Image 1 (spheres, helix red, strand yellow):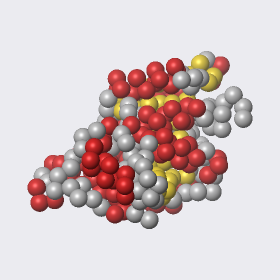
Image 2 (spheres, rainbow, N blue to C red):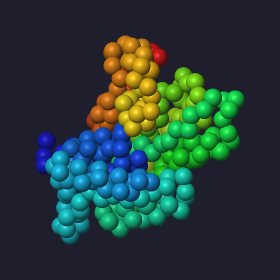
Image 3 (cartoon, rainbow, N blue to C red):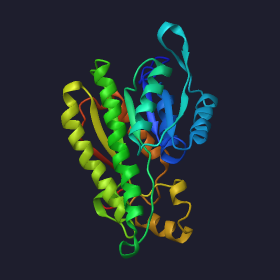
Length: 264
């Protein structure tokens, strides 16, 4: 494998890259040779991720004219179209090209039982998790097509909850089920441009989102997993790296479950 790694210095946009799965995806893609555009509503946290990439040996690659193009952090609200449009403009200004890899990790939860859930909590979760995924996918695809494509890999981080549901997560389950449908539709529309679109469906992964879950509950969940443990963000990042690379060149419209066998 050459110095650029198997991703060959491609620009990769990761939303939700300030922590958790998003941060792990950034580290893995950088390890494989990508130049990272780390985007998050928490721009300072995205900057911390970028700092870790440099410290961890995510070497910048030469851009046009031979000038170095380091990893970079960007602030974005994926639920706002103008913010997403500005993000793509800034990425292209910085790197000189649109991202050929996009991993949508941005997501929120606002858990409450159905009978007590407010409309605002439902709309907010769908706004970030589903509308945000649509807006980022559309913006990246438009930029790739305008640049002449062919080629590109768009990866949506969904959730197994979108398939099986979960108590207190009607909004989250609905948003992630929508992400799967969006993935399949985008895969069919974008295939003619050589752009692939796939989804990754994590199970119970230890992230900042699980910090508020009582340890006894986490132990119970771990006991339900056939492989006997909760997932690590790296487990998801490894699958994203595969889908980002040419090793998965004949895969599009797929949903890959990363659950340790839970709900099989």
